[in-house]
Amino acid sequence: MANGTFTIKRTITVRAVVTPRWKEDAERELSNALSNSDAQLSQLEQEGQQLIDAIRSQSANPLDPRVQDQVASVQEQVAAKRAELEEQKRQLLEQQRQVRELEMEQIVEQGQLESTCEVRVGDNLVEKLQAAVLVRDGVIEAIEGAD
Image 1 (cartoon, rainbow, N blue to C red):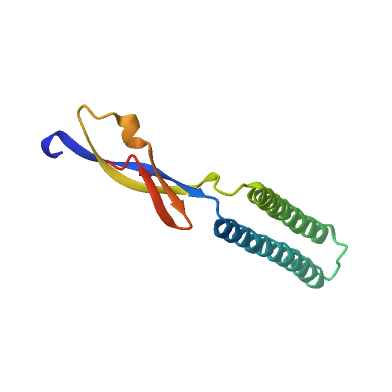
Image 2 (image 1 turned 45 degrees about the vertical axis):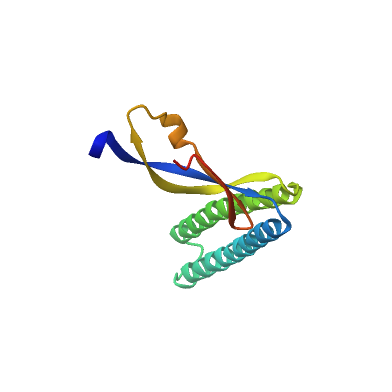
């Protein structure tokens, strides 16, 4: 703490101007995430069925209650994971719908970064913590609260 100042961490909000390029990039990212989600669902179903088949084939009596319990357990785990993946997919579809409805030149929050800043006695801490960057197609157009 030199000269009555010290450095603190702060979060910087990144805001983006909606442009054709921004929309295209956002939709591509969401489409890729949806494809990945579909692949994960497919892989989950396949691996779950393989595990069930392996449990049944390793048993002398597939109708044994212990085997049935193991199969039921696997099915429950697969169902829980499927529900989780389907919820993620639903959220991605909602985000995709929202992106399509955005108007050009609209400003949207795109994420956050971390930074540090110096504070001293007499500074307005609220102002120091309210930092934001405005970007258009990746190029910074404005910086708020940079001091």
